Amino acid sequence: EDKVVQSPLSLVVHEGDTVTLNCSYEVTNFRSLLWYKQEKKAPTFLFMLTSSGIEKKSGRLSSILDKKELFSILNITATQTGDSAVYLCAVTPHGSSNTGKLIFGQGTTLQVKP
Amino acid sequence: DTGVSQDPRHKITKRGQNVTFRCDPISEHNRLYWYRQTLGQGPEFLTYFQNEAQLEKSRLLSDRFSAERPKGSFSTLEIQRTEQGDSAMYLCASSLRGRDTEAFFGQGTRLTVV
Image (cartoon, rainbow over all chains, first blue to last red; front, side, top):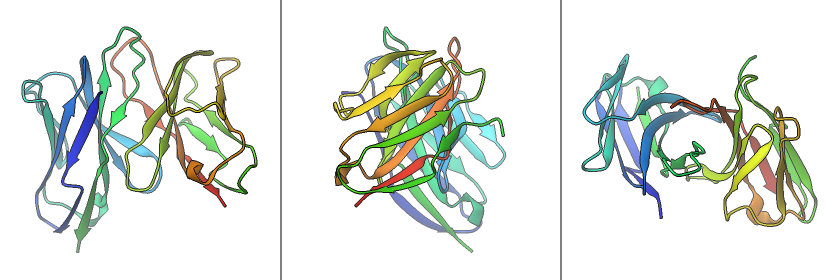
C-alpha cells in the first residue's frame, strides 16, 4: 500500500530559527512529490519535485528530493511567525490510470514563536 | 475569484440527514478531486473526475457517498444518512491533465454531524 510518513509531527521554534521537515514515502510507481502549506483551510502549493538532487527554492523555503532513499526535505530558514502552519507532503503515483491523485502524509505542525 | 470555490463553508447536520456539497473548480481544469481531512491527519483521497467521468473511487467512499460532475464543470458530493464519523473537512481540488501540474484546493466544507 502506498504510504507517506512525515516527521516530526509537530515542532515549536523561535523566530529566526532554521527548520527541516522530513517526508519519506513508499509508492509503487513514483511520479512526483509535492509540498503544501495549510494555515486555516485550503492547502496552498509550495513545490513539486520530480527529479533527485535538484533543489527548488522560493524565498526562505527550499526543498529537495532523493528518489534512491525515497525521501524529501523542506527547509525553512529565518523562520517568521507567518510560517506557522501545517506542512503537508504528498506523492503522486504513476499508475496506468494516471489520475494525478495525491497520497498525503499526516502533516507536520510548525509553530513559530516571536 | 478564479480559484476553487466550495459551498457551503460549514454545515451542521443531525445524524441520519442527507447533505450535499458543491465544488466549482478553476474553469479550464478538467481534473477534479474530492478529499476528506479529519483533525490531525492529512487529506485522504475520495474520488476523481476527468471532465464528467468519475474514473476512480476510494474504498473509503461507502455506498452512502455519491459524487457527480454532470457537465464536466462543477461537482457535487452527497452523503446520505450521515453518521458522526462523517464529521470532517471535505476538500475539493482541481488540476489540468496532460502535464505534471499541481492541484489547487478550495477552502473546504467543514461538516459536523451531531
